[in-house]
Image (cartoon, rainbow over all chains, first blue to last red; front, side, top):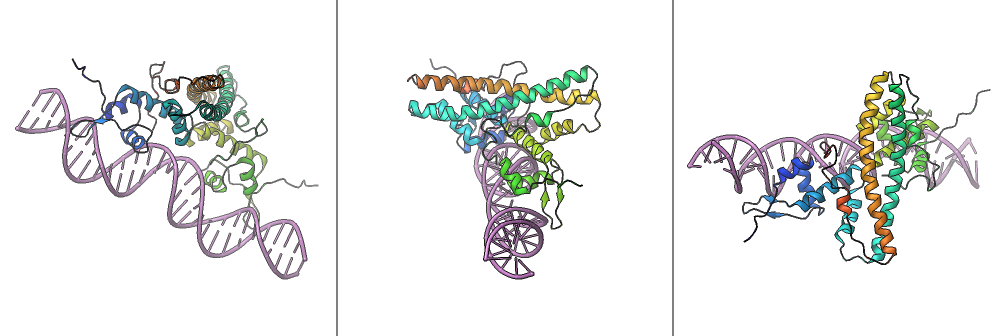
Amino acid sequence: MAEVPQYMTIGTVSKRTGCKVETIRYYERIGLLPAPVRSLGGHRHYDHDALKRLNFILRARQLGFTLDTVRALLSLADGEGESCAEVEGIAGKHLGEVRGKLDDLAALERVLTDMVARCRGGTMPDCPLIEALSEDDRPGGRRGGWN
Amino acid sequence: MAEVPQYMTIGTVSKRTGCKVETIRYYERIGLLPAPVRSLGGHRHYDHDALKRLNFILRARQLGFTLDTVRALLSLADGEGESCAEVEGIAGKHLGEVRGKLDDLAALERVLTDMVARCRGGTMPDCPLIEALSEDDRPGGRRGGWN
DNA sequence: CTGGGACCTGTAGTTACTACAGGTTCAAGG
DNA sequence: CCTTGAACCTGTAGTAACTACAGGTCCCAG
């Protein structure tokens, strides 16, 4: 007794993730998302794994990771034949970037939280907001070329 | 006795921040950076405050904040005539985004750290990497439209 | 069956940079 | 002082990462 497969159309995936239909097709075209099975008429049928994979991509993008980095992280997740040493190398490299972002975000959170608290107290806060993200004398100094 | 003003050329700022010269000029054109004083020949002369402001912009961008968000945060920092209630509203709104990103990054860090540790132990790790950023059942659910 | 919404592919546009071209400026060295 | 080469200028065009649109097809509910 074959089970009726559960699938979602691209529009449903779009609604569930908030990602535009065109962007989903774009990610498929550049290889980040696997091409899904199609109806006889050519409509895409996505399974739950595809939905999760897309959510990963979207959140990584929102965290400022480039598509190349997303691609590298996905290859880790896919476990495509890498040796343990390679996995460690790739994971370790991206871990550095993740930790840097965490530090920056934590600093930003502290300043914004302080501002909100002070405003509730009725005082206009000083705003060391720029200083929170502008220090260039941390270990490792400035980041390699941003752009 | 007038002090000799310290300034930096755009190339120096570029080298010190890792940001391309063209990008610095772009940020000036779109109003994120104030137009600096110029030499008689038209060369830009930047002070230390401009350097710090640019570092803020670059790091916020690397954290995935849009230029509009960067602009809003900078207006907080500039303290341009907002009331306490307005500051609280703006800061609070961006604080939500910051905390969401923090949660995601923390999850990603945990998975990557675990992978590195397991690889060092000689075992090929499972990789719940996609799951780290794909949960869509958290309080607040999925984010509003990404793109 | 019909009609309207969702889907398809392909093209073009937007945002955020980034490179390049041709001309000018600047400063160090002779 | 003069020369030279690097750095600077403006403006245009290209790239990365989407995003919208157009014209045609598919699909499903009534």
